[in-house]
Image 1 (tube, helix red, strand yellow):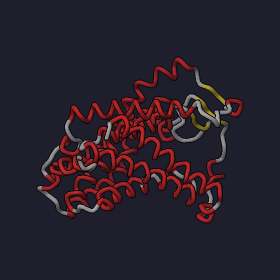
Image 2 (cartoon, rainbow, N blue to C red):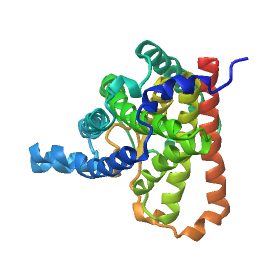
Image 3 (cartoon, one colour):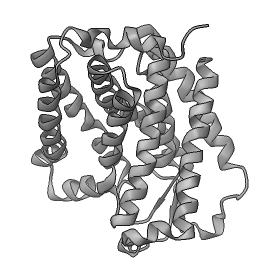
Length: 301
């Protein structure tokens, strides 16, 4: 019987010829700078009104712009890896045909799962929705959104599950290192999405769990396609199904709930021990677990 992570041996092979920690640390530092500067670059070419919409993600076009800025990060990472490791883009991705097939297979499986979950109890109470955007214009944005999400999720998977997972697997056989460290770094990167310490920790827990699911799928398949497929389906629902009026990145949401002051969610860390927070942590982890199971069933691994 084939070991579940046997494909990881092939996937890490491009990293074995330069299995040193120095370049990895250099790329970590430089990419942090790129992540900090990159989103601001499009602002240099915008009018004041466009700048405001872009920063908030208040319109469909602004959200698409936000997602496409991840192309800057992908280009920077590819250049750094070529310079410091002497290898190229596809060495971090895996076999192209298998990768694309896994994106489609897992993307559809997880999308259908999330679609079914949307119509299961507890049903969405439409009476609480403040605005429903016109269906036809919303549908017209979906193909463009998927393309932009390929850029955004593809870059994140290229970095965390491609480059970092490969390089750390070349440095150590310990799974907690090559699966755990990139996943935790991925989780930490989501802390700033929150409005307070407790909210930030919840984001970190959820994103770390998602990272571990993607790391497992990458190790089972030997490419980042399954991870991208899961990530796209998850983010597609996050961006296009529901949002809150006036909140960041709500420009593509079909259903908009009434505006709330986001700083009402500025809870201290003690709130993490409250029953509602414990329930939310369990629910988030179960949600990721179910998506991971759907992906594994789809790829039969």
